[in-house]
Image (tube, rainbow, N blue to C red; front, side):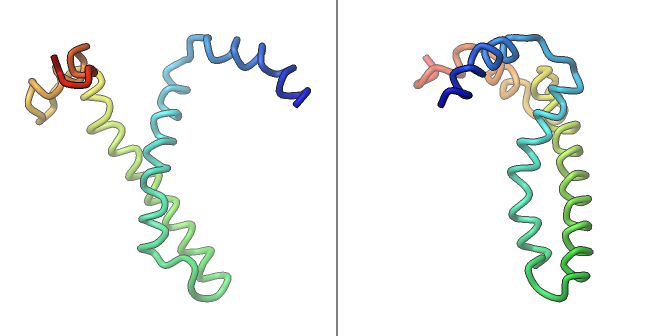
Length: 107
């Protein structure tokens, strides 16, 4: 408890600092990675077989998850955050970026 109290000012200071584009990219990718990892690991059946087989399957799964995360981030997440429809209806992007989209009833 004492350590947590001592670290609170540092945590508050670091969360209020402006981050670079690389930090933001890794933050975005980590969430996409989190969403994908169980489905890919389950599809690869990484819990079956010998130790070497599982190691190979987990390595392949990690490469696939990282690649899919980057594609999703670069092709979908980034264009939507910039307001560039990129194949999506322009109204969807504008609604996502407007304040009205965040109200409970869109009023």
